[in-house]
Structures are given as C-alpha cells and as structure tokens.
Image: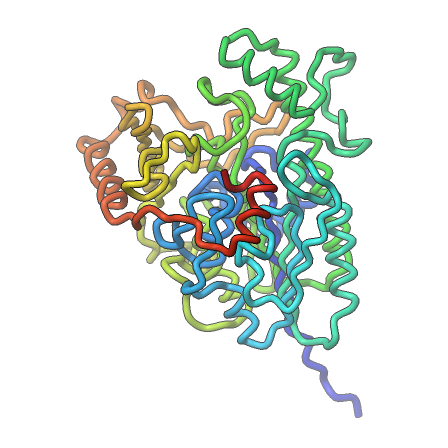
Length: 448
C-alpha cells in the first residue's frame, strides 16, 4: 500500500536587485522577472525609503524606515539592538544562506546576523568597493545550496549588484540595446559617466550619449535577469520575493542627472517588487507600499508568526478582498547625500531631500537647497514602460501639472506629516566600530 507523501514545505528566496528602477522591468528586457510577475503579485508602486544600498536593505531587515533603523547610508553598521528578519527566520528552523554581490553589505555592516552562511567572496575591486558579477553570485548561490548539511527549509538571500555603475555588462549584454552604429564617447565607464553628468548639468549632453547610457544600464539589468533565471531553474517551486533596493537617475533629474543618493523622487526610489509562490495569485497591485513591508511579508510566506518592526504584511493586498481593510498609511523617504549637507547637531540626513507618499501623492522637500514643499502625483502604475529608453519611471507629474487637481489642503496635510516624521528623527549618529574596521571601511571609501 502506497502512503501519501506530504510535499516538502517551500524554500524562501529573497532577491535584491541593486540600483534597479521599476520601469526597466518588462517582457523584452527582463523575461525571467516578467514571467515571475505574470504568475504572482506585482506591486507597481513600491518605494525604497532611501536611495542607498545599506540603508535600504536595513529597511528590509528590520521593517523600519531610516529613522527607525538608524542607518543613514553606507558604512554605518546596523544597530545591534534591532531584531532582524534573518534571525527570525533562523529561529524558526530555516537553513539561512546569504550570497552578496558588493561590499556595501559586507560582514562589518551587521547584515550577516542570523545567517549560517554569509558568502561575501568578492573578486573584483572597482575604485573604493569590491564586487562580483551576477554569474559569480549565481554560481556561489547554487554551490551553497548544493552543500547544505541537511534538507531543512532554506532561506536564501541573493544580492545582485551589476546594475550599479559602471555600466559594463559582459557580452552579449554590453551593447545589446544600443542604437545601431553608435560611435559616441559613452562606453559605460566611470570616466564616461562623469563626463555625461557634467554635460547634463550644462544642458549640452548629446541625446545619442544619453540613449547609450540608458541602453548600457538596460543591458546590465538584462544580464542580471538571465542569471536570476539560471538560479531559479535549480529550485523547486519556492516562494520568491524580488525587490530593487533603489533606482538610478539616468538623465531624469535636471540638477543631478546621473547616479543616486541626493534625490528621493521616482527615478531614485520607485522600485520593482514581485512576490511569487504557492498560494500567491497573479495580481497587479497599484497600492503604494514600501520596502519596510518586505520583511513582514517574508515571515508570512515562511510561516513565522509575528510582525517585523513597523512593516506590514502585504498578503492582504493579493487576497480575495484585495486590501479592503488596508489603511492608506504614509510612506517616508529620505536622501542620503550629499555629505556636505550633513550637520552634527541633528539626524545625519535631516537637511537632505525627503518626501512623504500617501495614496497617489508625493510631497517633496529639499531643506539643504531651500526647495519645497512640492506636491506631485504618482500614477496608478499598472502600465509599465516598454524599457526602450528607461524613462518616465512612474509618470510622476510636475507640481504645476497637479496644482489644480490636488484636493484642497492636501499639500499642507502632507507637509505636516513630513514635519512630524522629522521631529521624531533619531539624534546624529557617529560610526562606532573598532579601529581596524573603521580603517578598512575608509579604504573601501565608505567612511571619510
């Protein structure tokens, strides 16, 4: 007599796409991610709280925005007193494995807490950081899973860094999306990006060079997508949560047209978020959510009770009720640069650009520039750009375009919310580490 076998509980895979904008995800550029989204929940209005790798990942780990987890930017270790997602998962009996693609998340930053394995072998040095290409990250992740000492459920965290500058994906992705016959100076290097940024500030950047920069960025994301597909092909129907940790300007911001860090508008903070797995239906969800909600959602998928920080489990938004009881809570965003705007008398980022998102509205202020408050509208987001030029990240209108459409008193209401958030900000934070760790981070360029 054959006994019925209970299928093993699914593993949980959490994938971070560094520097990946929401609008680059489409069927042509990212077929792996597009196929995932087609069979799971795709959140069209997901926001990173900060446009910097470590602070953004700290929000996922703790369920807190930057004022809650107190990580201003790269180089500031995660405070040891905060409960973190991997520890909760490990305590529930999961085999926890982390594989990272860049030194911004290296062990001195405290991101390895709760992991049995934290693989940070990074073979390439680029200026002030160490990193690994997506193929290496995928190889390491597959190897770590193969060497697991037991068949307990796995929690696998994988961090792909390639979309970060410089834009130098390996062939054939290097120029896969470039215009035929392009012969301009942009080659994806740091030098070329600096020159393009300088030209953009002077409003003399050649359209062909801008298009080439976007094409090379798109190639990086396509390369990551292919490597993610190779990883997922080795897994058996896991839960998969994919998020972008922040975006990239790509010529969309007039004053700071390239890179990320000084801005929190849509190009910098509107990111992809996809949840797939057993029991998660296909759904396109336009409700604004934040990366601080990811941890609580992962706990739900893992079957671990209890929340995480202030984050909210996103499952009600894909349930049959589709979020009928979901409250329209404000989401707070904060820039992490420029360092010259930092003052020691208050929270490190308090003078930098900041915003609050509630419903379809975003209100921005930039105290260090004396700008704002500026009210903009965030579109519903179900229509994703085709990726051909990686622009118009979420169809955020300019303030003049929404002034007549905004409800009376909305700007003042959101401005008051943002002021209250700032009034409760933590004090200025120094970096408290051993002399050896401090010197090491200085060598990597994370500390001055």
